[in-house]
Length: 250
Image 1 (cartoon, rainbow, N blue to C red):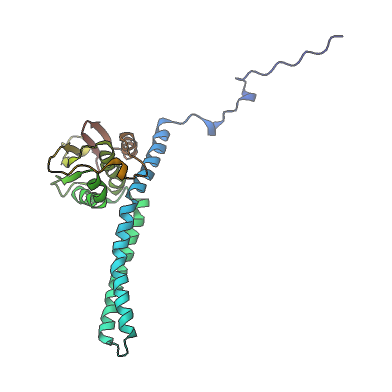
Image 2: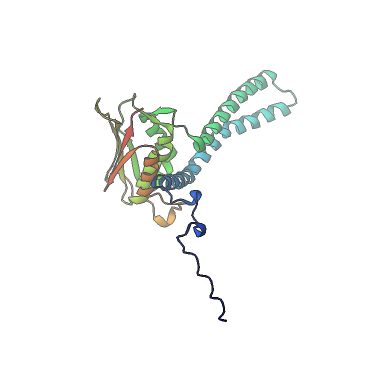
């Protein structure tokens, strides 16, 4: 009697041997972009942390200085009560402002899409926050946004716009003047207007710092900006020395 032949293996395509389930379905392009955008936002946050820490330290410095003055006056053998009361009142106001500034810094990790800020104000805030980055890369940011009524979501400024400025810092070594302009959209357009960043070479700007002397946690590329723009519903176009961002309507 011949030995029994081994049973044939089941087909890999058979349902009982399939290892795919609903949870392991192929990832959609939108999901992939969301992951790329999340990584890009984390990288942007890492780059702005030095500026945010400086903001916190600047807010706390007046509090520390006034505390030192108050401590000396309290230890005086004949303390001036009127001056002490005045210092305490000033200290209360300074600590409230410092607390508000710290909360604003913490807000960078949870920016809102519903809260809108003026484009002109947002560009100025970005220039102040990235002053050191821009200086190290010999870029002078020129705010050419004249329309004070134009607005954009807070989340746009804290991801896409800041990321775009960092990309200009990382991708252009020649320096120059980086001009920001805004063009309002036509009434029948689906766009909320176009924000344009144009790099204008300028002999008046100093040479960029040596790459070896500038340590960056992570370089920001155009693909990072594109991923964040898509996640915000912003249409982006980019070329040699220029970038446009078509904002969605409010």
